[in-house]
Length: 488
View 1: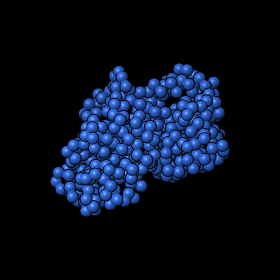
View 2: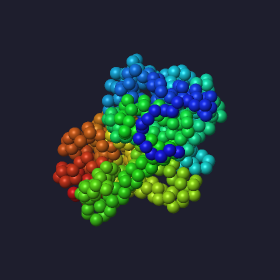
View 3: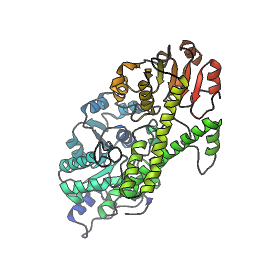
View 4: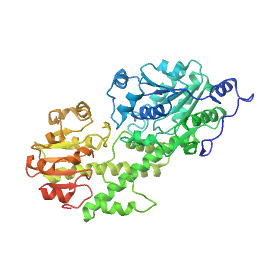
C-alpha cells in the first residue's frame, strides 16, 4: 500500500493498460464531482458524519438507510433515536432538503455514487474467539447486498465504523465474488469524534484519515473522495494511508485512550491508600507536554460501545497473529478496568456495611454525559452488584429511557429497580447517592436539601468528581470519591 501523505493531486486518466471496467470506474470518478451519497446504517456514528457533510454541501443528496423501520421513522418524524447536543435541531434543518431517510437499501444504493457503511461490529457470541473476536458477518452480508443492488454500476464503498484490520479485504472479496471486481473500490474513513460532543468535533476536525489500496482504481477512488472531503476539511488536513493502516490506526488510538484511562484509575487506587489526591497528582502529570492533560480524570471504569470492544478485538487479533506478549499487554488494560469497576462496587458495600433493603439513588446510567448511549456503561456493573446485594435502586438519567435501563439490567432483579422522574425524587429517603454519569444538571442539586431528605447516615459516592469532598462532609454526608483520601 501507499505511504502516508496529504490529499492532493488529480486522478490519472483512463488508459489502455487499465481493464475495461477500471476505465469505466475512471470515467465515473476520475474528474467528476460526487453528488450523491448513501449511508448504510443510520446509527449515531454514521448520521452525525452525514449531517456534518450535508450541512456544508447543500448541492449533494444524502440518503440514509436503516433496516429497522422504527429507527427510520424516528429520524423522519422525530424525536431522534439517539441523543446528542444539537442533533435534533440539525436533522430538522436538513430533512426534506438534501437529506432523506429510507428503509430501502436498493433505492439507497441505486441513488448513490458513494456508500458509507456504518454498521455495528459486535463481538462473536460463540465459536473461536467468542467475546473477543469481531463478528464480521454483518459486513459480509452488507457487501453482498451492495453488489446485488448496484446492478453493475460503479460504486465507492467507504468503511466508516471502527472495525478490525482486514475488514476492507473481507468486503472486497465478497463484492468481487458477487459483482464485477473492478467496479467497486473499498476505502476506510475512520471516525475520530467523541460521543457526547460529536457535532462539535465534526464542525472542524483536526484531521481526516482516508485509507485506500495502492491500485489504479484505489488511487482514483481516494482522489475522488479527497476532492469531496476537502469541501468539509482543508485538503492538507486529510491524511492518506493504505487501507490496513487506516483500519489499525483507529483501533490503536482507542486502545491507547483506554490505556490512559486505566492508568489514571490505577493511580487513583494508590492515592486512596496513601492519602494522595488524584486531582493534584494528575494536574502535575498533565503539565508535562509529552503527556498533556487529556483523559487524566479517574472514573468508575471505561464505558461505551467502542473502547472495550476495540480492546477485545485487538487482543484477539494479536493472539491470532501469535503476538502473545502484545496480547497480554492490551489484556492488562481490560483487567485493570474490571478491577476498577469491582473496586468501586466493593467500596460502596464495605462503606455502608449492608445495603440489603436500603434505597440507593443511582444518578446517571449513560456511559458519559450528553449521550443516551448506555452500552457497556459502568452503571451496569454498579447496579448489578448492588442488586445482587439486595439494594433497592431508584435510577434517574435525563436521557436514557427507563425501558432501556430495565432491558439492560438482569430481569431477576426487576422488582428492585424503580424509575425516578428526577434526581430529587431518587434522593428522597435514600440511604445513599451514587453519581455515575457527570450530567451537568447534577451539579445543580441542592445538596443541603438532599441531605435533609435522606435516611441517616447519608452516604455520597461520587464516581465522577462532581462534588467537593470537604463541602459534602461539612453538610453531613459520609463521602467516598474515587482517588480522594477520606474526609478531603
